[in-house]
Image (cartoon, rainbow, N blue to C red; front, side):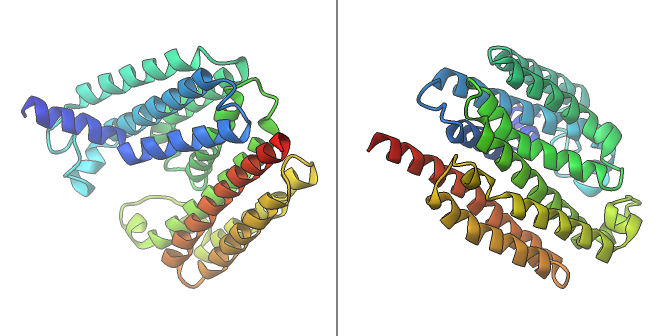
Length: 286
């Protein structure tokens, strides 16, 4: 392989789209907490730590999955020979080291979250991925925690709304992960995987996912009830809640459409927190 092909392979290991998405979620967490303008360097460090950690986690995931990928994903960097297994492992270590370096510049709460997340990223593929529901829950936590990490990266005074965003994002992600497992149940059975729908049945798994989502939707008005955000927040989060609930119901008949529409509701819910923060800052400045 040429240097260019190896470089491209290393970039592929990180899953650049996932890295960007996670970094944006961390930025939103900082923005919701009101720290973007007050502590911009802390926000930059948090975003950088998130991006590097996610890239490292994806790289080490491919390292552990390299034998399975030779069969199911032969076009990936390691199976096609663009990156050696040892090279992928070393690359992930470098990225993890960079993430740790940025995280150590942040407050203790952020360091604590980063430490838990780094350990979870390493342990996911090797220990938890094949356990029914556990892998789903870990992925859900990691997605939701990006918001919490972004908020914790600043002084902590605005973490309240981010906690609700963390819970809503984590539960919505867990719901979507379970629905995706229902969608992929035939292929997972053939590969011998023990996902939640395989372990307890499709309908029961979907019922659990829907119940969790209902609980998250019930909790979504908390920032308004605590006077952290105003009516503008409610006007955006209400349709987001509706979309997610409809998507959960839809998944019982069409898991593919349900998990896709649930994603739109999640994006709109994140937007609700941004709108709530912008509206709050405008009201203060007037």
